[in-house]
Image (cartoon, rainbow, N blue to C red; front, side):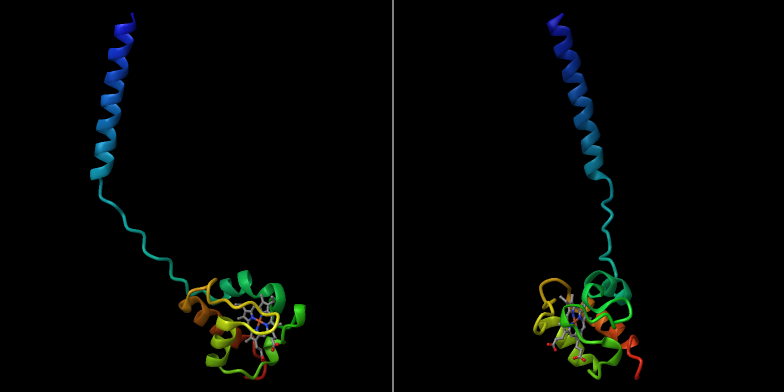
Length: 112
Ligand code: HEC
């Protein structure tokens, strides 16, 4: 009785390990890095809290982005390093994401 079940479990184990070998040899699909360029999405996640959806909220003393005169480079620097109560995003977002969200913030600008 015991012997039989032992053999049975060995068979199951053998079958299982066969299966996993098959899995290993299956072609590995490399997922492409997601294009992290959706500035609007990043803005929603990382900036709206203080700046609001239209950039005008001004929470936590944040500046009205729709009235900002800063150019793209200055915004990238701003987002990277932060200022005052604004969070530095250099360890939170990638350079690409920072660029994308800075570009998006330009679109909120009513004066340009
Ligand atoms: C924790 C709140 C907070 C978050 C989150 C935040 N900001 Fe700010 N932001 C501020 C504050 C406060 C200032 C004003 C800093 C100062 O000049 O003292 C500011 C200023 C700015 C300015 C400069 C505006 C100007 O004309 O001087 C830009 C551009 C900006 N933020 C963009 C962003 C972007 C883009 C994000 C998202 C990646 C973001 N901020 C997230 C609080 C925040």
